[in-house]
Image (cartoon, rainbow, N blue to C red; front, side):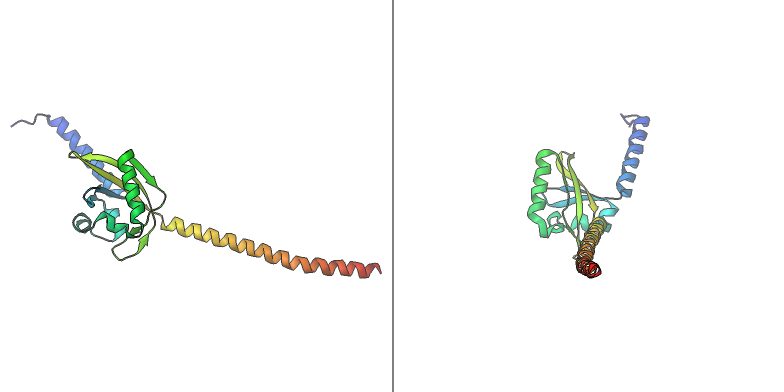
Length: 172
């Protein structure tokens, strides 16, 4: 039986699929394709497994999406509903729970995509742990700077008083 698409079309589709698969596999962000009504993960890239500490097979068969966000479940559900209503969404921060129980702060960008007639959500999840640590370090440095300024002020005040007293004695 002859292929109705023709060999060039089949080759072009295969090449396109391979390019998209490479993008998916080598993304620096975790990518999840989620069935929002079934609370399950339909597809996940290697970075998703790395981020959460589950194997790909575990993510696809045993991990409920809601179990990844147990501490912020209402925030996660509101985000999911907004994405479904608007077709896309982005959140500054929503923490993810790893298999080992660690909480990972993350940014999530999501969009609705129809796969095989089913509305799914594709999510790009970025671990922002390093950014949060850098922000905390900057805040600590700012606090140290404020403390240093207060100490300098407190040291200068008595010295100014002493200098004024010495000036007075000199004039006598």
